[in-house]
Amino acid sequence: EPHDAVKEELRESGVLPGLANLGNTCFANSVLQCLLNTPGWFPEACLAFSHFEDSTRSRMAALGRSFQNLAREYGSASGGALQRSNLALRNLKEAIAAIDPQYAGCQQQDAYEFL
Image (cartoon, rainbow, N blue to C red; front, side):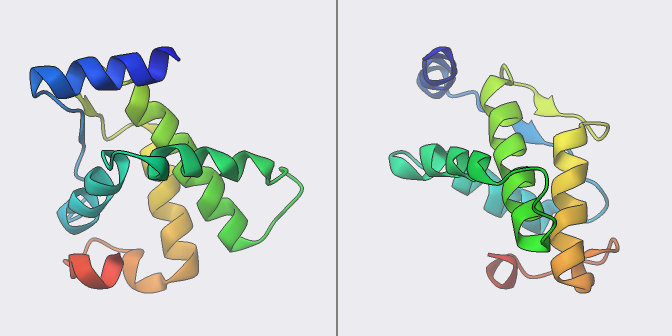
């Protein structure tokens, strides 16, 4: 699959995509980048969120779809950071905040608690 080939090429070159800071989101970015670059089944398992239909309105389903979209965008990035305007990145932040309002603002948080 092209997505896997691009990720492998980036890993070999030592250049991986980054995530733009959306206001003190470095705690979340570090966790997300670790998860998105985990070798093995995790990145592929994220694609399983596609089984949630758009008619499913739960906050957890929205989070799953948002993470799936971010994984897709991140996998297709070519070494640069996803920009602040990236819709997948912004939607993930909103989906997380919908589940836990402490992540709605721009306050610093603990990466371990976020995970």
